[in-house]
Length: 487
Image 1 (tube, rainbow, N blue to C red):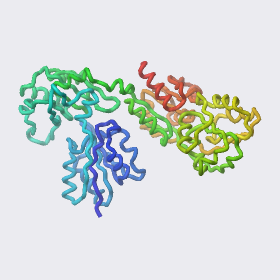
Image 2: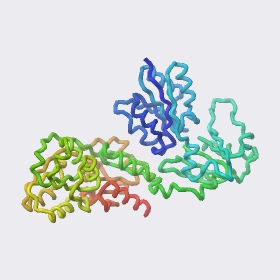
Image 3: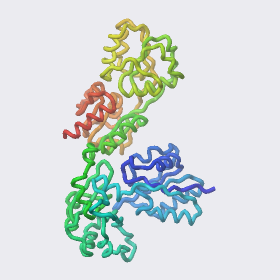
Image 4: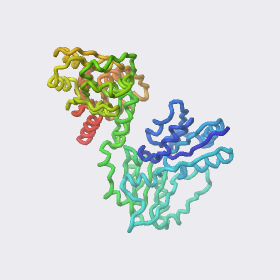
């Protein structure tokens, strides 16, 4: 029985511009054949057992022939698999999706098309350029700047294109920009007509330049603009100077940030960083390993102190009903821990302003004395809290529910992380294990979530460059943004 092929557009680069349908299909696919120019996080939602095949093409780089790609699509579909052919941009706008659809028809393979935001609209918009604008132009034409080199002659009617009364958006035209400008001027377009070129449109490291048909090729070369890029010709290109908004909305544009959190926890902070324009390197140095544990009767305790999100998650693999904690005062360290408790139906009674053990001990001392205390936590953790409560006469039971273990770091991730502008640590263990795997912390600016994590950095002979004053992921990101703006 034949499978099915989905020709899916992944959008122009910003993961937030992917359609809901695209995300759903990636999550359900048996096989995903993907291009290079897809959002960095597009494959995160794929099934663990899905086969992911890189068939990307980048101008001037390694090429996977189209006939090989098409053959792979059909091979997997005819084997009864659900195949997603994932393309940057829209599959039917210079994406060769039509060719693959015709191949499916010829092979008798059912297919669907999932359109997407195309870069010819999105990249200019992210550069502050509306491709149509009342009073300037009411028409737009999308043109390939890179035709099939095997064709004996061009299919573009350059004189007619030059006479087109509207905006021209060229895809893949960086290497032929001189010729494009010459043909348009020869066809009657003014040499002084505004032109903008947007490189890596909608990505965190988007760059754009402005010029005219007379000088844009020189401007692009001098600025080091390369593929992928969209070239916009017409009066609307001048609006870039007034409407450019990306730099303010994305203060981390052009910066690369490495995240060392456990893979299961990294997605939230990575998504936040990407929304601020950063290119994110996920280099998890740790992973959470649950431990076998026997939960004591919670009714015996008048105080339960939860110190991390992981502790909450592991605790509720044993607690069947939030009402089991009804008789105890619940203390929590950190906004993330509070949010996770609330997700399980628990509103914590004690939350210190500072997300460190010393702060919660200070608050609990004021509210004490306590008789029996339970602290569900990691196997290895600081003893400040249990020792401080015991010193006040409390009977304290520490319940190890998980341990933090090292995550192997492959050479590519190591190189990318150490080559980033910022290297972020959200725990002392992530510092220790990353250093063990990488051999150094030298290179990036080091960002820590708080003083305990900073101490772990110093213990290895390095100095943290940025320390969050609010000791949670949001505080870390805020501190990083402030540093980037100051530099």
